[in-house]
Image (tube, rainbow, N blue to C red):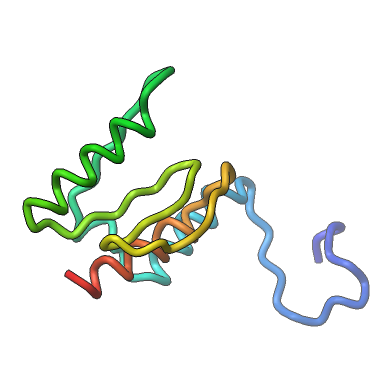
Length: 105
């Protein structure tokens, strides 16, 4: 038994070396790997990421594509708001949004 398990905890306990990596793997498996059925792109840089991503999202939707936009302002899936603003994203959130996109594709 791990020394980190509370003494009155009765559910199964899984201890991993890297929690975020384990959550990413578990999320991908739980949601059926939606990232493998989508084309994903990322925008990096110091300034203009939000504006650029919204412009690209608008252009792709106008061309008939289903899109998902994940950013600090919020999450959008197929033109609908999925989640409000958050700066702490994790794979559970991303895969959860993407599986909705796969279902609407």
